[in-house]
Every structure is written in structure tokens, then in C-alpha cells.
Length: 205
Image (cartoon, rainbow, N blue to C red):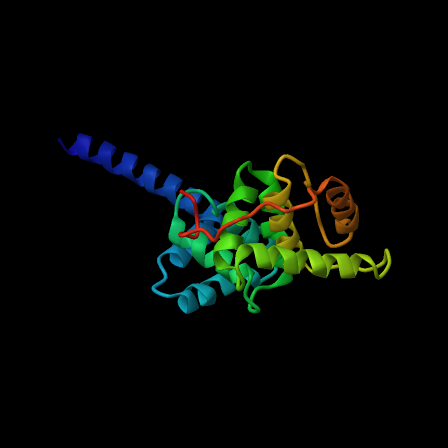
């Protein structure tokens, strides 16, 4: 009996050491996953923004942001709503918006999800908001080839292109190459842009 207890103790000790090693090795990834959970569990948008701020700080913020945007569109609507609202807010960093924009290219279906949310939160009716965005980019495009745009503007443009030319591919759209994508859209755009009503919910699913 004593021998069995000694063996059991050794097995448990080895298991605890192995578990501790795994936790230590992956501690940063586990911390990022826990922080994502805390964003989803926030009681308010203000609380969620404060928790999202953790991802935008520190020397490993690119890894933190990759974990954050990688969770968008994976099944937690509250998390999706908080993050989508934050990237459109003045409190968001450009690095977060860049990470979010790149994630839209990485996984199928995310661009459509973003465009749906964009229509839901639009200040004007979606048709009017689209017209406003088109007029803005027409003006910016006329200023010369050197004009770069921000990632906030990139996200607006991505929504516009998705809503009005969803069969086209505009992967890799960014602040420096937006003009080529926009010129291609201008050549193929219909004379009358499609009517797009405001969705009743932030996401279709």
C-alpha cells in the first residue's frame, strides 16, 4: 500500500512539473487568451476599451494585437461588437486598425461581416454614407499620387468596396496602394450604386 502511494505521489509530481513547464513556456499566449476573454466579459464598452488598451501596449503589442483580431468573428458576438466599435473610435491605435484590416484579408467572410457592421453603425443612412465616402475618396484621389490615407480610412474604403463590388478582390489594400484599388473600382462601378438598407442587428449571424 505504501509502495502504491509513493508511485502515485511520483506520478502526480511529474504531472505537476510537466503542467508547470507548459504554463511557463506558453505564459504569454495564455495571458493574451485570458485578456481576450476579459474583453468579451466586459460589462460596458468603456470597460472593454480599457481592457483592449492592454493589447496596444508593451514590446510584444504586435503579438497581442494578432491574438486580439484573430478572435474576431469566431463566435462571440459581444467581443466582436466591442472590437468593431473600438477600431472606429478615436481611442484606437493605428496599429490595431492595421492588424484588423490585415485580418479581414486572412479569413474568408470577415470582409462581409465588417461591411455589415459598418452599415449598422453608419451615422447617416448607409446609402448616404456610401455617397459621402465616394465623394471623399474622389476628392482625395484628385490631389495627386503621393496622398496616403490612414487605416481608419482604409477600413471605410474596404467596407465601400465590399458593399458595392463584392465579387472583386481587393486584398492587401492599405494606406499606400489604395489608389490602385480605388481606380479599378471606379472603372467597374455601376452607374447607380446598389441600395443598401441599414441592418437591424450589428451582425448577420
